[in-house]
Image 1 (cartoon, helix red, strand yellow):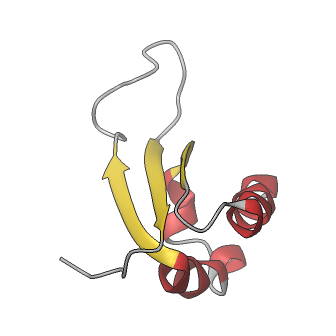
Image 2: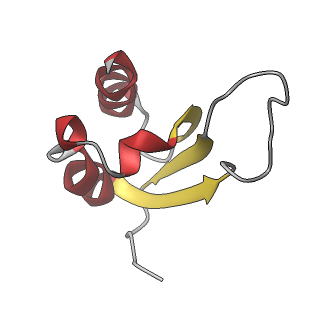
Image 3: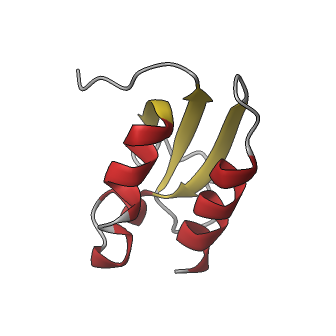
Length: 79
């Protein structure tokens, strides 16, 4: 899953108080390929996830997207 490598690379380039957002497949939350990425991303700042898999954001496609936002310089917390 190339999107996981892309998210990691962009997070490494993010400025100290920067924000990045991606629309990615919701598999990022469960795939074993991203097992190391998830905790690493949480350690980089505040991570917000919005699951759009039931919203049919793309009505003509069979996709299950989610939005992942990283705010560098803030502590992540689980809610």
